[in-house]
Length: 632
Image (tube, rainbow, N blue to C red; front, side, top):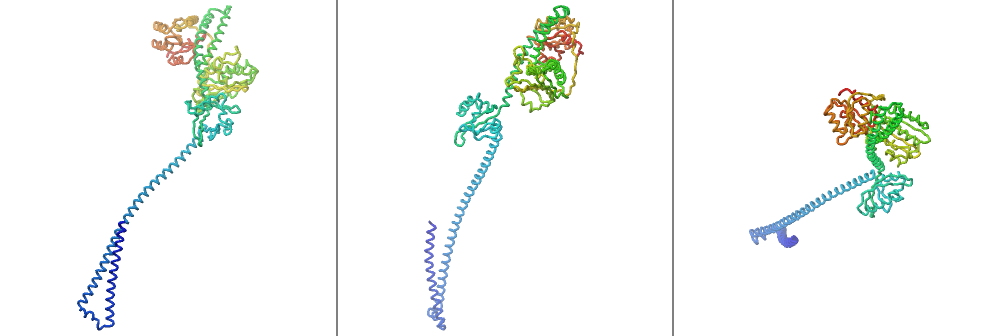
């Protein structure tokens, strides 16, 4: 506003000045015109005016006029210059003001531009991150080992490739049939009830395990987890389903293995106690046979009792084999030799069975108790024969195999990877269903009629194989026969050796300390030893044995020591005996076989082991082996 007023004042002053300039110009012009006319017409009278007013006054007037004109034009020029300066200053101020405005606006634009640039970059980063996240989730869903799908209005939508794969394996149509229709009838009500509660947010387990079944009765075990979501602006359920069929099989096998462990412990205890009873009977029989000659009418009766004892001992041996009570005489052996020997014996008694020996080539040796392995093979032959009552074919084969970590991890057996010898027995019999296969290795389980089988054959086979560090598999289908595969750890460096067993009792005259908490065994054992010519000292406990040995160790040549005794067991007694005399010779005796505590005592330097029940021949052989050992 101030600038506008100033401009108006400058305009008014300029108009007045312009009028004065015009008046001055008019006077000067008139004077010059008059002077010119006088010179033209009155040249000789040129100085008329000067003469009239005088030359000096004339010059003065001329000078005054010139000065006035000079002052006038100078003032006008100064006035114009001042106005120009003021205009320039005003223009400069205005320009500076515009520059400040431009700078301010430019700074604001630059700041806005920076913010916009950051925002654009952030949006680009967000878009890239979103695309990457979307790609990651897509890859996760498409490559997941679990089936992922959405159930909405009872129908499956958005199934991932794994869901499609499971549906193809089961030959089911996810696009047409509600998912819940494929749940096994045994599980359907339970799963549907859980599913409803899960989607309502009730406090129920996160997942459920059940079976899926298709119209062809093919089944698989699955584990399902579900969550409530909003899908395309409607309520739906997000589902994660995993095929756990293999896991379920392993769990079943593991539970069966644990069950067998428990039963094995019980069977071992029963066998131990039973062996002690048989030992009492065998001791009496052995003593009577020493006193009765062959012509005595009672001799055959006593031999019959001895045969019954041996039969009972074989049963307890099977129980201990199942209980994995130990290996007796372990040495390198060829399974081919054992197969040929046992197959020949079996073939002579079961001529309606055609025996085929396959792939019995050059196989590795195994470290085994040959007697137990023979028992395993004969058990399997008999089992196959009973599955083929009208005759059939029996295929026997061996093979060298290498089992790696990957294979071992898929099995519930606690074995080491490495070299194994595989022994196969296949029959063409009636086969077994799945429920029967689950129980075949249980002791006393049998599908035969009462009186035709003890149910211990396969149970002892299982225990013996496991005790040798191996494992056994069974494959069978009803009406399609059965195959048993046995894997035993190979000894790739050893060579087989054979020793002929001693069949006659060996006599002696040394002094023996007999230690056992069972009075009947002490008495019968003493009579057996005395019948062989030995002097016998008796002890019914560990403390009594230590007292006797501490007093008479210089006279005692061998100690027969029972493993299982109350208060102080055989291992503790052995250690105390060795403290009294580091060279003490000890023969360990037990109703259990050579495993666990007995094996540990043997590893500490015990001289030998004999399993109850034993006769005079076995006992005499063990005693002579120990007495004839080179001093350590």
